[in-house]
Image 1 (tube, rainbow, N blue to C red):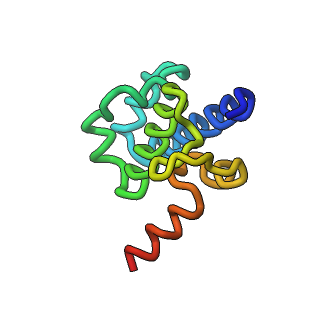
Image 2: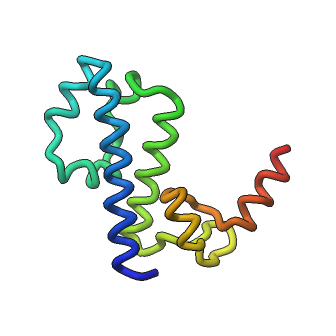
Length: 118
């Protein structure tokens, strides 16, 4: 996968994570204190750390899933596996990653999963 594209996806993922955390900080005083203490570079580094208990309590279930997906994508970038389908190993199209930067399945495998889950 092209290094420039992966770097832009990393920036986008960190931005999405920051947006979730800042939105939560705006509505939750306890969480605001946690976010304000974080160094901006820590937003990317948090992928390797456990999410703080207060953070989990403050986040809604959708936000938790999204942050975990973002953290997993950042981890795949770090490991050099970003953009590869975890099921079949094929390259995930850049258009799909631009639409859903934390996608783990190619379109074909995602369709198969959706059919099985019906």
